[in-house]
Amino acid sequence: MKIQTATSIFESLASGWRLEAFRLLVKRGPQGMVAGDIASALDISPSSLSFHLKALSHAGLVSVEQEGRFQRYRANIPLMLELIAYLTEECCNGHPETCAGMRSASNCCDAILPPLEPPGESPRS
Amino acid sequence: MKIQTATSIFESLASGWRLEAFRLLVKRGPQGMVAGDIASALDISPSSLSFHLKALSHAGLVSVEQEGRFQRYRANIPLMLELIAYLTEECCNGHPETCAGMRSASNCCDAILPPLEPPGESPRS
DNA sequence: CAAACATTTCAACAATAGTTGTATAGTTAA
DNA sequence: TTAACTATACAACTATTGTTGAAATGTTTG
Image (cartoon, rainbow over all chains, first blue to last red; front, side, top):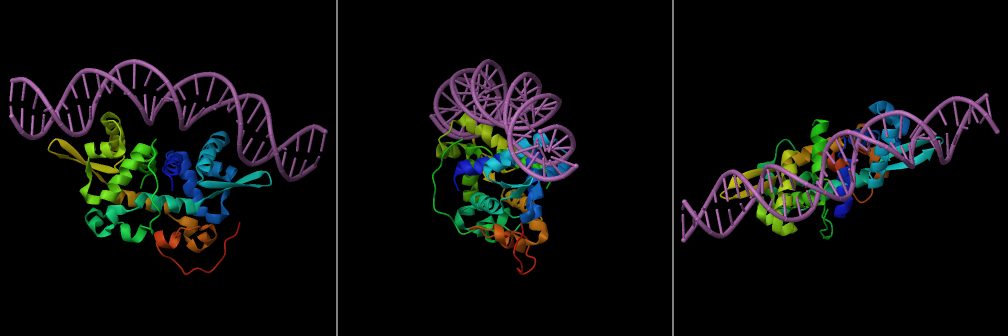
């Protein structure tokens, strides 16, 4: 994953409205939700929601499909998982056991760390 | 995890500098890095790096410890994992098998989410 | 066709984030 | 103490983001 991709995804999750909307869509899975239902669930104006959904969609985190006069949104779960993989990549230099001292309740590197990905470049913000 | 915690973490990862710095720290694990070494690695001005490290630190994603005249930063890996858990919570309504149709290269819910039931069905749209 | 509905776009404004250079604070060593 | 070093804080500026309500786009129904 390119760093610009990752930052744009994080940016898209950095608002309460967008995070709530995305989590709602993650819970729905492939079924997704139409925009109006998301607006009702979050109690947000259609205009504002549209603005935020556009941000999520531009980051690739959600997909849209027209359905009659509705727009159905779905979470892009594979991308979410790629992001997680990117974030946890090469944790502790590939020696998860050294994470032991940093663990809390969570299952650290060994549970989450994915098979690694070919090395990329390092652009800037 | 409270939503405000999550958004502030995402916000803190929404800049290239901060994401690079955090990933660097994740790779180092408990050893961490002092501010100057991070600045050299990223080729960023001390002033600007300080600004970004403060953001990461304020979000709780990194910890700081004074070490002589240096400041040693470490990634808060448990918090990172809590965030991942929060994001993937109740994926597909607790029926990960319905994620199957959304998968790409990534290992979906069963790798990351609490294990549930053996797969049995195809998704619907 | 026109009317009702679902959603997006736009414009104007307010609020916040990021950059740069300089000044300050704290630590160590001569 | 003074000087060198490491890092943070501040001020001024530019750029971006988010909110609001009204208008526009596109769809279905009568």
